[in-house]
Image (cartoon, rainbow, N blue to C red):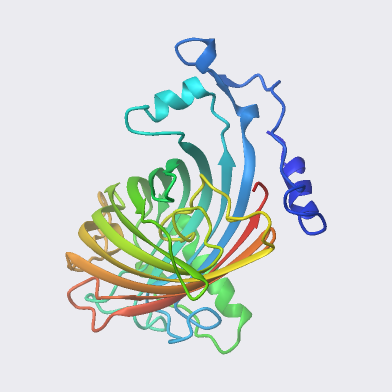
Length: 363
C-alpha cells in the first residue's frame, strides 16, 4: 500500500476538476496475500487504496460544546480514522456478500485509534463521592469491515462490523491528556480525582450495526432522506443494544449511510462526494437514538479488579443535531448531542459537542 498517490490526488482535487483528480489504485506486486479457496479469490494488501482520513474531537466544554462548559461524565473523545477501498475481486466479494442477499455491493475497511475520557461531576475534588461517575480512560484500535448496497431508487442497506482492542485504566493515558489540555488554558480547573480511576484492564469489544436508507425526496430545491439503524455491542467494555434514526436534508446529499461519528462509525464504503461535478455540498441532520444497556465498564467498574462503580440506568436516550459541509476534497462537520442519565445517582443528563474533519482521497 502506498500513501503518496492518494495524497497527491487529494492535493490535485483543489486545482483540477473533480472528474480528473482521482486516486489511482496501488500496484499489484505486494507479496502479502490472503488466499481463498483458489487463486481466483485471492486478495493482496497492495489492492488497498486510501479513501479518506478523518479527525474527531468531542468535548463537553468550551470550543466544542456551545450549550455548556463543565467537565463531567463523558468529558472528551478524540481520534484519527483511515478509510480504505479494498478492491476485492468479484469472486472474493461474493464470499463476503452472497448474491442472494446483495446486488453489486460496495466494500470498505477502516482503521482508527481513539481515546475516551470520563470524570466525575467535580474534577477539583481529589476524593469524589462514591455515588459519582467513576474516573476512567479508554484507548483502543478499531478495525472495521463494511459492505453496502445502493438500489436504483437510491434506497439501500449498510453493514458495519468492528473489533476494538485496547486498554482501560491508567495506561489509556486519559489523565495525562486531560491534565495537559487543561494546563494549556489557565482558566481551566486542574483535574484532581484521577487517583480513583479504574484499574488497568485489557479491553476487547465487538460491534455490529445495520443501516437502511430510504428513497430521496426533495422540497424547495433541497434533498432529504432517512437512515434508520439498529445494532449491538458485546465485550468487557460495553454490552448493549442500539437503535437510531437519522433525518438528513440539504444540497447534494452524499451517497453514503450517514455522517461520520466518533461514538459510532464512518461509512468506509463510499466517498463523501455524491456528484463529482459539484465543488461543494452541505446538509443538516438530526438523530434520535436509544441504547438498552446491560454493561458499561465506565459505570459498572472493572471486570476482575476492585474499582469504583455506580448502578446503571438500562435505557439511555440521545438526541443529536449537526451540520456537515464539503468543498471539493475537504469536509467539516459540527454536532451537538444531548443524552439522558446513564446511572441512578446522576442528577441530570449531559450534553457535548463534536467536530469532525475529513480529507477525501477517492471520489
